[in-house]
Image (cartoon, rainbow, N blue to C red; front, top):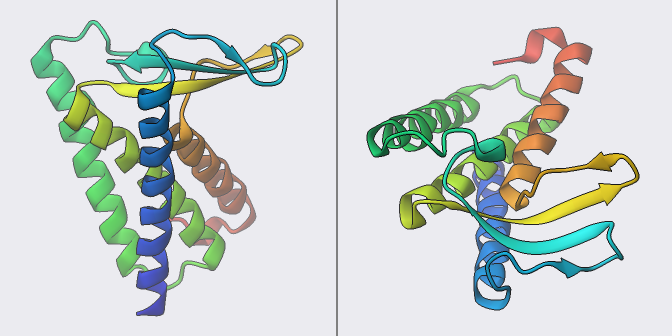
Length: 160
């Protein structure tokens, strides 16, 4: 029971951080505004992404967007959450990784359903390394996937 509460708490924490940060950006940063936080290395902006990662799917028809950017992710996230809550042999790191993926996924899904787009607002530039514009949900999903990758390589028998 404690494990399930922990999973739900981590998922809700990820969703909360994502939604609060996006709300702050929507209220305080003009669309396409370019704010340098650490020189040209850390940029704050406000971009609405009507597609998925890096704009994939922006040109889809409304029906395809509904299916591939809302319906399918909702089903996958619900299955992942259900399986994570049911699985008994997950160590705390696997639980944390899945909570990051689920919470971040739900955070972006909330935006797609409520606004028709996802608010992205962070960009990092370090020498030749330059990210696309992303948000806290993207960071959660990426962190969770990287952690899952590391744990799966280390403990091959614990994957769902």
